Image (cartoon, rainbow, N blue to C red; front, side, top):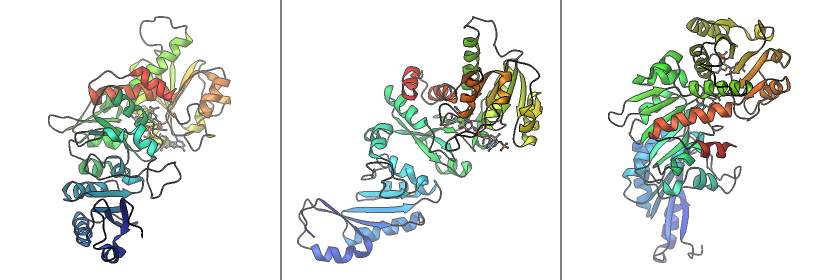
Amino acid sequence: MELGAEYVDIELKVAENFVKLISGKKPESFKLIVSSHNYQTTPSSEELSGLVATIQAVGADIVKIATTAVDIVDVTRMFQVIVHCQVPMIGLVMGERGLISRLLCSKFGGYLTFGTLDSGKESAPGQPTISDLLNVYNIRQIGEDTKVYGIIGKPVGHSKGPILHNAAFKSVGFNAVYVPLLVDDLENFLNAYSSPDFAGFSCTIPHKEAALRCCDEVDPIAKAIGAVNTIVKRASDGKLIGYNTDYVGAISAIEDGLRGLRGGKDEIGSPLAGKIFVVIGAGGAGKALAYGAKAKGAKVVIANRTFERAKELANLMGAQALTLAELENFHPENGMILANTTSIGMQPNVNQTPVSKQALRWYSLVFDAVYTPKVTTLLREAQESGATVVSGLEMFIRQAMGQFELFTNLPAPEKLLRDILA
Ligand code: NAP
Ligand code: DHK
């Protein structure tokens, strides 16, 4: 092998022979990386530390260990080993659950990370693109004092949160990074990442109700809704405070849609007052909208696939409960409002819709919480039926603005957020 190269990366199992081969011939500028790959799991901290010592003993200039995340909490063991390693170390955890080992390596002292030139051309599972590393996560600005925020969910790869919040943090000079967090068990995750470095989270499917139970304190509105979509770790005592910004995001967007419908007349009170407001769904988002509509004086109706959950939420809200089949023939009056808060129609199932086009003619405004795609089949068919439509993107921007202000105590850069998602 020509030793002109600056670095050579060689697997541990052949390294000893290689080191013998180059002994006495190694130029000063030449660095030897000795690596170990585990494509099944991430060993214990003790085993990882032992592996570091073995690699060092072989004569590595740089230690490289790549393991595989079975759960996102596995990454904490790699971070601990990197922080305590006495020589330069590349520590990466492969797979989607290990993504933050790649994004946060410079925060925890990792020697380097890898990015793929294009999606679909990863050289190892879970590798982000170089463009995302540089332009979404601003990786060159991440240091040991950078605070970490992120979107907790399962799935979480579809979220536009990282694009929005990282651009917003950068625009106001807030030293933080917002990352995707594929979480299986919320309590385990919050316990493993209890360090003040992890300062706040957005929560999406299926963790919003669990998030309420995991918080030390919950905002009264979020408690009434029964769902938390925002967790802030209080700097003074590390306690987890839960909020719900979905509620204001969606309701304010729908009210503005109705005001547009009425020529933007300045009205006293909410345009929702007295209207029939049908919520499809009874999960975190469904609870937020049902609570918000009720608080604005609407007559709330809940339709849900699991009828028991529809009845449970309806009883809480003093509302009517329907099955999805009953929804098809529900039209006590014209000019009702429909809000889909199920994940029906969300990528990749974009042809699905929660209610037939036929049934949409009774509604004057239709809202869809799903925002990937921007125009869902439900919104397209509602528009074709003559209804005003309000996209989940409008809710997403407004709930993200609320979160940004909770994370930073700074006003959200609304125009930037809208330009990014335009
Ligand atoms: P969640 O708590 O898991 O609730 C999901 C709801 O969807 C439940 O009522 C569930 O019914 C229903 N559902 C799921 N799959 C269904 C199917 N195939 N057929 C019929 N009903 C189905 O989730 P969430 O947090 O409320 O979020 C729900 C959706 O809203 C997601 O697409 C999310 O991305 C979106 N969302 C968007 C924003 C935004 O800012 N635009 C904010 C919040 C949520 P069961 O009770 O029968 O399971
Ligand atoms: C979606 C939601 O459900 C919001 O409540 C979160 C998340 C953001 C997302 O980024 O997809 O705050």
